Length: 113
Length: 110
Image 1 (cartoon, chains in turn cyan, blue):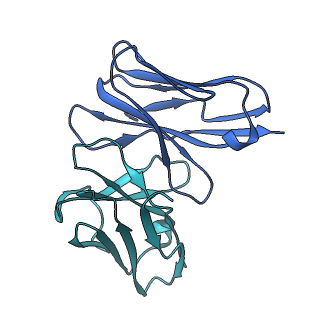
Image 2: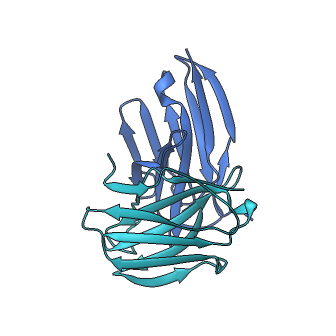
C-alpha cells in the first residue's frame, strides 16, 4: 500500500472515446504528477500540480487534459487518443514540488484500439 | 541525450549471485533516488542519497553516491528471486523536477 490509489487499473478505449483516469492520495502531499511509461522509454513527466495549480506541462498533446480539484485528487481526461498513446500511466505525489521523493500509484494500463 | 544513463539495461542472474548496476550523468544532482518497479505496478522508492560519497545499506542492497554527485551505484549481495524487477534511478539536476533513467531490468532465477 503506497498511499496513492489509481483507478481504473486497466482501460481499453477506442480512438473516439472519452475516458478519465483518477488518482487519489491521502498522504498530505501538496504536489501531484502524471507520468507516462512506454516500453523501452524512460518515465516521461506529463503534468505537475502544486497546491492544485498546474505548474508544469511538458509539451503534452491537448488530447490529454489534467484536472486537480483539490490536493488529494488528480484526474487525467482522455479524448480522441491515438494507438501510440497506449502505455502505463502513473500518478505520483510528493510532499512539495521541490521534494524529490515521489510516491507512485500502481498505474493504469491504457490500450487504445 | 538521456540525462541519466543506466547500465546494464538488462541483467539475468542466478539466485545467490552478486551484482552491481550503475546510474551515470554528466550533470550534478542535489540528490538521487533508486526505485524498484515490479511488472504491472508503480515504482517504489528504495533510498535517497544526498551527500557525495554517501553509502547507504538496505538489507542486502548497498547504494553509493559518487563523490562528485554525478553518478550512483546499487550493489545487491546474494540476489534472490524476490529482487526481480526494474531498477530506476532518478534525480533532480539543480532544482528542476524529478528525472528518471530508463532503468535496469533484473531477473533473478531460482
